[in-house]
Every structure is written in structure tokens, then in C-alpha cells.
Image 1 (cartoon, rainbow, N blue to C red):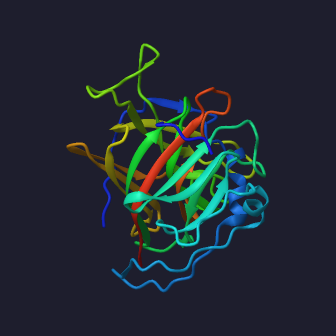
Image 2 (tube, rainbow, N blue to C red; image 1 turned 90 degrees about the horizontal axis):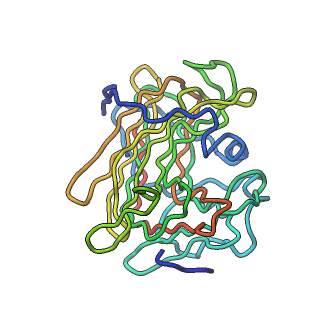
Image 3 (cartoon, helix red, strand yellow; image 1 turned 45 degrees about the vertical axis):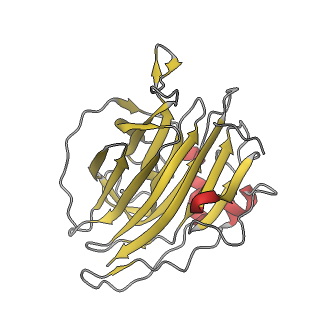
Length: 303
């Protein structure tokens, strides 16, 4: 393996759209295969009940199983929780010092049962109900990024769209994703006073859903900057409001500040699944590796 140093109530927050893309860098051709891998959870809707003792994790579905790379396996006692989906010809997951789990991927033109390179963990889905949500928290350090963008957490829409845009169609993509990429000035990487690279965290939200029959669109907005080698804390919440409409919140703290984003999605599906780790790197660059360390993972369900 190559080694280099290489987010209760929500309010609708208006924000400036920096970019709208008809074909996101994480388009549905990379995500359709996930539909066969996502389990459905059944739960009793009890007001204000929160459970953070996540001990049951889904099995890999046929698409994920076919896409697994030989030797890209989980360890026997991983420092992070969730089922590992490991599809990278170079890299993978390993436990490292400090209680971290390290995820490393190398971009490739290869597709692993249709999906781009990924080393991610995921959980059993949550099904639609009033005020039902899930919250993932973890601490992370980004050691290296590729010349492209890499997703570190995503809320994946599954099942039929039951409200909003394209109601009645089958969803085939993420509600939103948090991506990291290199910060550039005049085409060159930005560095801090210590020589460490500066990275940009971006929220990619599906504003028109990708479905089994139609392509969609995403908006991209900047969340904040983070610095190479510095530890930050992430809180990610996704699920349904009191009217059973999809909503999410992402927050990243550290480096002296906290930046958050509330999202009231314009479509709602039957289920939502959380994935985190490393998904996608530059496919055709000489600088194509991404590496992140994650620890203190906790996944909580409410209602």
C-alpha cells in the first residue's frame, strides 16, 4: 500500500449557491449499486427515544460483494463502527495509533461493480416516520487529498420518493454529501504558516433527485476550511421532521470555530442510510491518493 503524507429542530437556512451541476462528480452511476446493499430497519415510533448503542450492522449486498477488492478487508476489531465497503485497488482500512481508523483510497478509472473507488462504513437504514433521525459523530484528521474531491460522509436516499420532487420514482443517489478538496490560489495549493495544506469542505445537495429513470442535479456550497493534520469534530444528523419530510444538518468544529448547515430537502424517500469514510478520488491524476483518520465514532437513533 502506498503511503504519503499525504452533522431537535431545524430551521431553513438560506445560503448562496456557488455552483449547480447537472452531472455531479458523485453522479448516480456510482451510487445506483448501493441500493442492493442497504438494509431496512423496523422500529417502534416512541417520542423522544434516543438509542446510541448501535451493535447490529448490515451485511454487504450482492453489488458490494462483487465490487470488493481482494485483500481490501476489514480488521478483526476495528476502531470504527459500521459495515466496511472496501473497493479500492490500493489502500483500504486499518487501525492506527491514538484509537483512529485510517481510510485510504487511490483514484482509478476502474469501476467496482459500477461504482468508483470507496472505502466506507455504513449502517442499517432509518425508515420514514415523524421526528425519526440518526446522528453520526466522529473526530477526524485529513492527512492527504487527491487532485479531485472525496466524500467523507453522506446521507443516502433509498426506496421510493414519497414527497416532493419526482414523487413516485425510485431514488438512486444521495440526499447530500460532505466533500473535501484542496484549496487553491492561482492553481497552487494554499498552505498555512507551518507549511500544512489547507482543504475546503463542501456540501453537495441533490436539489433534483437522481432516480432510476432520470438524472438529477446538485448544488455545491462551501462549509469551511480545514487544515492538513489537524483534528476536527464532525456532527451529522439526517432523517425526518414532524411532517415526515427529509431534513439534515452537518456541523464541523475545530481550529477555533464551528460551521454548520441546515438542509430542508425538496424530496423525501422511504428510507435514509448513512455512509462515512472515503469515497472517490481523482481518477486520472498523478496525485490520486486520499487519506483520513477517524475515531470516537458514535451512531444514535431517535424515535
